[in-house]
Amino acid sequence: MRSNRSRDTKPELRLRSLLHRAGLRYLVAAKPLPHLRRTADVVFTKARVAVFVDGCYWHGCPEHGSIPATNRDFWSRKIEGNIRRDKETDRLLTEAGWKVVRVWEHTPPADAAELVQQALVKADGRGARAAPSERTAVQ
Image 1 (cartoon, one colour):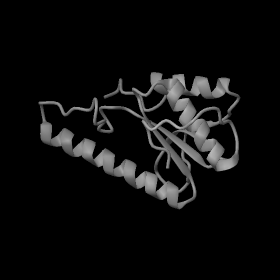
Image 2 (cartoon, rainbow, N blue to C red; image 1 turned 90 degrees about the vertical axis):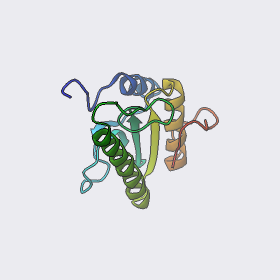
Image 3 (cartoon, rainbow, N blue to C red; image 1 turned 45 degrees about the horizontal axis):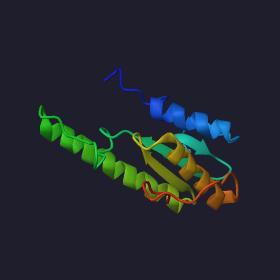
C-alpha cells in the first residue's frame, strides 16, 4: 500500500502541467473546505472549483475498475465505500457553492484541462477555450 500515491500521480502531474501552462494557478492536495476531511487534487480557491483525478481501481471506474479475486468482499466494500464518499463529497461541496470537476485517470490530460477551464469560466469567467466534453462530469 505504501507505493500507492495519494498525490502527484502521473495523471495529476500531466493535468497540472497543462493548467499551469495555460497560466492558471492553484493549490495542490488542499482541502476546499477547512472543516471537511476531504482533499482535492487541484483547488482554485477564489473561483471555488475543486478538481479530483480519480484512479480507476480505487474509485470504481465502470470501464476499467475491477475487484480482485482474493478477499473479494473486503475490496468490494472498500471500493463501494469510496464511491459513496465521493458522491457525498460532491454533494457537500456543491451545497457550499463549489464547482466539482471529477476526471478519471484515463481521461486524456488535454480533455481534463479543458473541463477544468470550462468550470472556471462558469465560476468566474477565467480560462475558457473549447466546447464541453461529455465524458466527465462538471457539477
